[in-house]
Length: 363
Image (cartoon, rainbow, N blue to C red; front, side):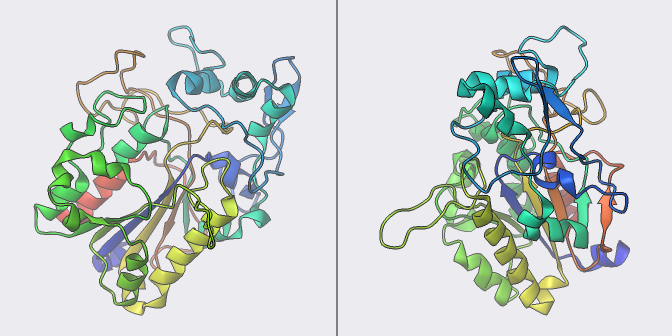
C-alpha cells in the first residue's frame, strides 16, 4: 500500500495477553474467509485417551482456574506432546489438554483449553480483523511466558532468557531509545504496570519514554499529538473499592469483554480525529498464547526463527531457533483493503521493531 506508507506518521501497538490465534479468531474461518482457522474437527486427547475437539463456547471468564501453564517446559509439552521430545521430533500441537490436566488436576477441566470464541462473542476484535487485515502467521517470539515475549517487542531479544526473570533487560537497547536518539518520538502509555521499566537505558529518562496516565493517549489522539511510535499497555490488575475496575489485558481468567472494550476505545480514539486516522497504523497483537490451543506448528530454523544474538538459554537449554505458538494479530489503517488476509509472511514480535525501523529510520 504505497499511499499508506507515504502518509504513515504514527504506529500504535496495543499488546494484549495470553490468547492463541485459534482461541480468539479460529472460528472466523469460512469458505469466504480462509484464514487457516478451525472448524471443530481439530482435537487433542486427554489423559484417558479420549478425543477432545475444539469448540466455540469459550466464556469471557471462568474457564481457567487455575491458570493454564505457559512456561517453557509446559509449552514444549503443548507443542510436541512431551516435555522432553526426541531430537528432531515434529511439532504435533497435541499436548494442550494433557498439560492442563496436569496443572488443574482435573480431566474435565483439561478440556477447557480447547474452548474457543464464537466470532459473535468478541465482535470488536473479529470485526476489525475482517474490516482491515489479519495476520495468520504471527507467532510469539519465544515458546514461553509473557516477559521474554514482551522483551522481544521492546528490544528484539530476551538476552538468553525464556523465564520470568526481570533484571537482565538492562543489557538490551530498546526501539524507543533507538528512535529518540535518532530524532524521533516514542512513548509507552500504561496504567498500572509495564515491564519496560526494567530496561536500564530508559530509567534515566522516564519522563521522556513513559506516560503513566493512559488517558493521555486518548487526549493525544484527539489533538493529533501522538508520538511517532506508541506502545499501549492494558490494565493488568483489577481494582476494588467504591469504583472497581476490571483488568483489561484479557489474561486468563480476566474478563475478555473488558479487553474488547479497550480495543474498541483505542480504535475509536484514533478514528475520531481525521488527521490522526489517516496517518496511523494500529497493530493489535497478543504477547503469547497462554497455554490455549492452536493447531498450526510454530516455525523452526532460518529464516523464520533466527537467533537474534549469540546468547542461548542454559537452563532450560534453548537456542532461540524456533518460535512460540501462534497469536492473534490485526492491522488497522484506512489504507488497508477490507478483508485482507496476510498468510504468506511469518511474523513474530520483533517484526514490530523491524517495521518501525523501516518506516522511521529507513533501516
